[in-house]
Image 1 (cartoon, each protein chain N blue to C red):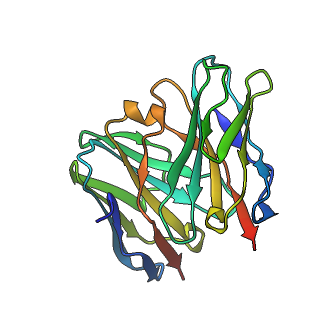
Image 2: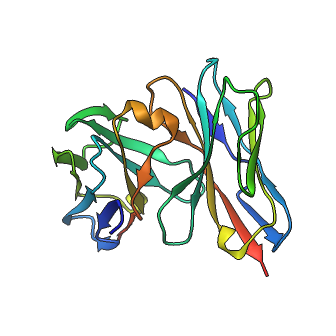
Length: 113
Length: 116
């Protein structure tokens, strides 16, 4: 079974600074997808960014970017110029073939003013 | 109107009660999911329905009983629950089960369940 590990239960960052959330995963497959989801307090979980494993180029969405290290099975999320609205739980997720999405335990990020 | 709506948002029940969680999606999707979110644990996939047919049951205890009367509605019937079942229950949908590969999962806000 595929597993997703987020080793940082909680993190904090000052507004306008940069923070990196870690994620590692375990699989024997070569083709798969990786995701970061954001769950704001009492609000819906939404997709932040997606990476296809066959693409070497790291995905970027505005202030959010990933560092995808396929050999190391690492998929970290970098948030630049942190904003108060970035305060949320962040979940790393993994999906391959037609299997269902598997999530990590989440990292609670707090952006401090 | 949000795409995926869950009711109730909060539920407190005793171990002998019978209650149900409801999920409704207004996105025209054909796959719906129940996830259990417990503190400091990975999200647990419980059930998957694709075109109203249950395609996944991840060894969930029988005290949780899903029902999918149509592609837009998904229920989770609860009876004789245990305190350890207290958690946030998330409903999600996707166009179909395969499109979940591309991350196109849309979540509801969740139902916070407390079992006394």
